[in-house]
Image (cartoon, rainbow, N blue to C red; front, side):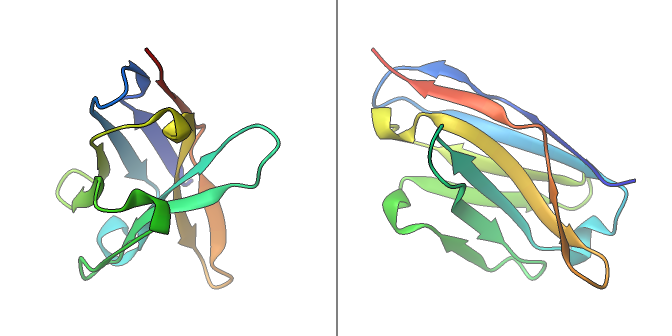
Length: 117
């Protein structure tokens, strides 16, 4: 059974930093691309960052060098380091992967990030 468990969210002031973690189980973690998405109520979920099995990465345009994504295959964990956070980064952040022949999307439960003074 695929499980994705996020942690590390919370309240931070503008310009601050947070690191999100996602511990995965139930699939071959090292072979899978892992991603972070975010969603604001009333909006569609948008891709924040993705890291492939080979370590290559992709970021949403709005990131603009502020975030990094990394993975620790020994710990089955993917991280999202977020720096210089802005109020517009306030959202629920979701860990994601795709598994199986149909590449079914798997989601964590989501974690709130609030950027506010």
